[in-house]
Length: 210
Image (cartoon, rainbow, N blue to C red; front, side, top):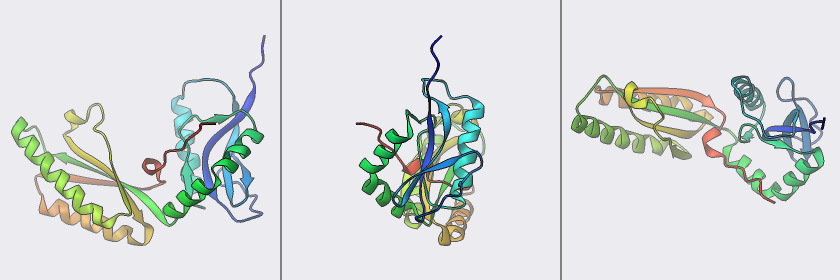
């Protein structure tokens, strides 16, 4: 029986000082290239389905790492064949990765969901969705970047009319949440929910081509 090769699961890439060797999250190690460090753990180098435990581990590792350093999250389930392959990838994309880290450093992601209070007629729902979209555009003025999030399965039943993620300067986090509260007061027909601060999941798109 053929033995499954062992590779390295990549959780993310962090900005670290030269000589930093302490793991950023329990159960992981660091693979260094200049001022970057890949957050990794051993994993089977094979195609596999990401289970609930894997997803929970992914979130835990990134949130622990994010508490210590700016981190670019990798897509869940990313596995490199070997340390040399990973180091080569860090080398090839070094300037892109360092530039991206400079953008998100000192920032956190806030996810905002806007819902209606109950069941409305289609026309009324469309009007409320328009008000929600206007409100998200106003919140954009407080953010370094904004990503509109697609409506997920079940959102219609839950009354969700809009979602977005905002990249917020951590020193302006309170000002941002205050503005969300004011929008909720201004639009009493809508409910506003803010979650975070999160690592910048919605603002990173890593490339793994040759």
